[in-house]
Image 1 (cartoon, rainbow, N blue to C red):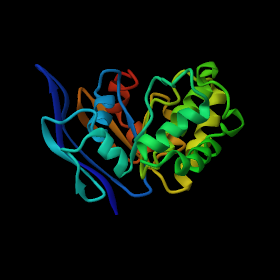
Image 2: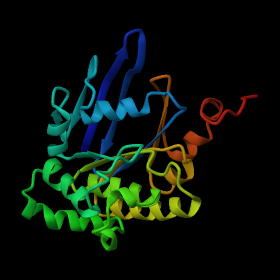
Image 3: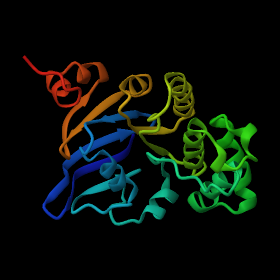
Image 4: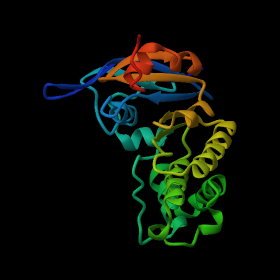
Length: 240
């Protein structure tokens, strides 16, 4: 069953067309990876899905409902959660309090009802033992985990991950992959933007390639990565 559908979505800022007639769909339980060079429009595409940005043309449907005109808060309540490329926790609050914000303001729970939701998100991301630490004192991996936990506390049907592995060591990336694989196994659909391709290949069913705001290619990961056009545009490998 279709969970998300984008149909002919476009967004421009003045003369710059950041997203150009992009269409794709995601089924429930599926994981999609999005790759492309810097400035290709990947994060703008996420903003169009979440409602942080409104399209100039095209539609966004979620769970069979046209959500194009809905705000980011409304879409979050419907089940679209996301992490951000650069973690920005509330540094003076504890890890638990940060995640409780997601459960209360994102999922709409009362503080009492949101408490077990927040603890479950901490458990799923391996942060339960650090629940009472100040978020501002966390190392990068734990900040990434916290970003993920806060998104999970909104109880999303669809989780959008924006370069969550960026800046991590290989060991830390491997740890993060395990967490994301568990989240997916528990039934959450995922769209993941990432430059660390091997991380994507460990999780996703399909790859979508974006270049200059347009969809270049979409398909099975090994087939997409073997494409000479993708290798030239994304990896910088010259095509003979």
